Image: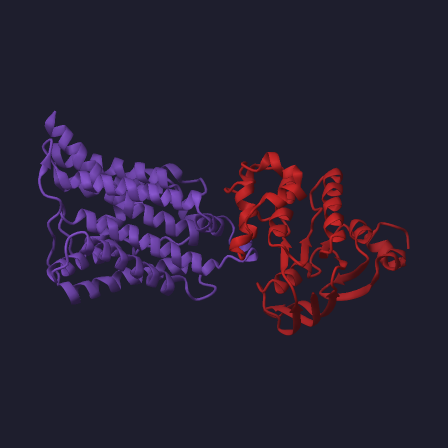
Length: 280
Length: 218
């Protein structure tokens, strides 16, 4: 029973990282219609930045916050490159983000090498579960709630939703659609960065860790058609828990396949309907 | 208010507007009528900077607001949120109260998502959203399209009231009878060119306009 509880909590913790990555994808897609394949890179860059900042003597907390801000800035730059040129279609921007993800590999290897890195998280255990997982769950809950409030209760959030709903109408009321897209990329970058910062103490991160994160994040987001944050959260948590159970009771070798099978099942189930990639 | 001089707009090699000139003066209510494909929406999009002219000049003074063809509301947002966004440029002017006084039909709808309203209700919200910008000139593209006559009459009543308060209006309509009834002056746009202009009563009395747009024998 204790073992099951441990798997469940670690699964929810890892699932939170997927949900944050997926939520970043959702924020960007809703506003710009761009599927951002560089989303995993934000997490890796933020995680690696934390290792450097801690190495430079910055305290925990400050280092993590700065790294998330750096990820937000990288997200903004990514958005600028992918969508900044007027007339860029979402499909073209998707390919650009794929290219930027590959470019991120080169940058990461140049600055941090190709060996996995990690840093200490919250020490100790609570009820047989590493306390850091509880921190991941708590921070994710607060951040996703704050993101939901941003969209539902602020004029900025309404403008982001309006841009997503009808870019033409947004322009005629004076909303700067390009700026809203860049803001979405910045928020997406920060959410991705947060995922990387939170998960690195329990899972080492190397330059190519973005693949697992983006596949799992995308799988979570696609459950909600890349537009529904609540379903993305549910998808992330489901994936994390199933992977933890598969890893615990079967073999860790099958964990990544779970996400792929999950994504495939959702896509096949949706085939024939107006799909998310078609809409992009 | 709005002064368009020799405006030419092209889509590739196709000319959508060919040396169009028109004017809406302070407090005036002007109609632009014409069939589908005449270039009316191209003119609207050029007025609002969405399209760039190949030649000619658009000069506007004061605030412009648009009620676009097809309403283009923010479907997932509530009526109140749609109205607030109408004043996006004016952070301090986002109080929706005055709009509910002008358009009391919207009061019971304020918390409903705009996408779930009827066509007439949506058009009312689109009008309210445009009025939130506190415009000096209101451009309305196809106000009556697809709406029941009773709804159109209600909207026209609101438009008359706002005009009486000094609002200038450029009404772009396929429903020529409505446009000529509401406006003091009108332009007729066909195949990207202004083919007739003048006081509405004169245009309504001309054989060409009567036959082509009012369904009367020439």
